[in-house]
Length: 213
Image (cartoon, rainbow, N blue to C red; front, side):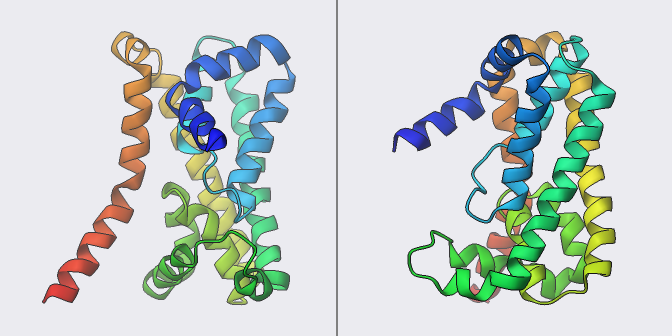
């Protein structure tokens, strides 16, 4: 419960926490951001870590010259691609055992939802999922379990990872320090999170309507 409260506070006040990290750790901030993005995309146990909101906030700090935007884009793109790569191979070699293990905290509903995205969009799911929390974390894992060829996965992984990092980070870079955004940063972050959840909500509503029919 304390962890949940900390994560909610971190996400909603990510500008404050990230500012403290930058002032405390300096250049090590890049390593911390790399680690968080790698974990969020690379392990099915940590889909709750901030992704979109962290990229947006990092871009906003880069606009203030607290971080270097070029270095930030490079490091976070590498983290996103390596995270999905690790997740793919975990799914490929250990996926079925992990899902079947009763003591490993994986929500099987997320696995089922991700499989449905693969059925609908095929390999493009890896790109589309980058912009959807939770699905983003489970998509490479399911690709590994489903034995998608690594060559096919890798191309989608690189394209999706770079697009996600550049769009979310540059959005923060160009818009994060507009006066209204700066003064209402917590509300903007909530908006970023809600917008990223729209595809999932639409899919849930579509399924309910289909069942009702």
